[in-house]
Structures are given as C-alpha cells and as structure tokens.
Length: 202
Image 1 (cartoon, rainbow, N blue to C red):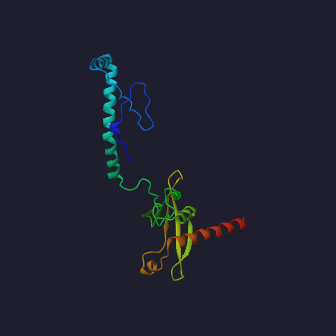
Image 2 (image 1 turned 90 degrees about the vertical axis):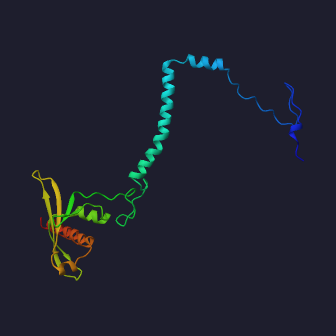
C-alpha cells in the first residue's frame, strides 16, 4: 500500500524523521539581497569588468566559430579525414602503408609523366631500380622489342628525369603491348645478369 506523503507530520527543528517518513530536503541556497548584489558589482574594477566581458565575447565567438569551421572543412574537404586511401594501386591503403616515392620523375616517350600516383608498390620499386641502357622485352606474341632507358641530368650532374621509350607508332607494336610491370621485371632481371657478368670479367 502506498503511503500518502501529504499527510506526513512536519518535523520540529532537531527532530529526526521516523522510519516511514522521508528525509527533509535541504533549504535552497539563499539569494543575497539586492543591496549586496549592487555592492559586489560596484566593487569590481574596470579591469575585472573588462575580463568578464572579454570572456563572454570569446565564449560566444567560439560557439559560433566551431560550427562554421566544421562546415567550411566539410565544404572544402568532404571526404573522411581518416580515409585509409585504399585503391587498386595500394590495397593496404596509403594512410597506414604508404607507397615509396619515385627517386625522380619518370616519363614515357619524353612526354607522358609517371609520378607514382597510379603505380603499385612493386612498379615503383622496379622503376627506382632502372639504370640507363638498351634492353629488350617480350611482346604479347612472344617476339622481342627494344626497351630504352635514358637519364636526363642538369649541368651539375643532378638527375632530373628518367625517360622510357619503346616502339609504339605502328598498330602491330600497340597490339603487342604488355603490362608495364612485366617489362620492368624483365629489364631489372637483365640488369642483374649484366652486373654479374661485369663483376665476373673484372
């Protein structure tokens, strides 16, 4: 049976409540009279008032600036800031497993740039191992064709660019194209054989 608390007898000062009676609520914090409030404000210095106003302005500004900053960030960069940058060129994601950079700019036919954006980790590693020289690679029909690697340096001898070229003008040449990674593997393997032969003859 629920007890009707409205019928509970009020306690006298110093009297403890019975087992069935609720605890009395504490008195609310007293509000100082207006005369004391005015006196407290009058006691503030100009510097105190300046600090209070400045703090209020700062809080209001930050409250407005944060949503504006988030909206601006979303407008300028709508993608997820924590996007792992997973792609077919780097399934592990460039955020946590970044691909190595190319040692310099590479070009095809002295015009088409190769900057590492659409190359896999293996392709970048192979590009970085290329040395200047005349090589031969395998077409899709099994025939061989030349694959030339040339370095371009400035007047101080600093490497500026590596250019790659191979036959491409005829339709037959274009029909025989293979994925670049296959040819890079062939060239790097030939470099290793040539290096071993040079060391043996030395």
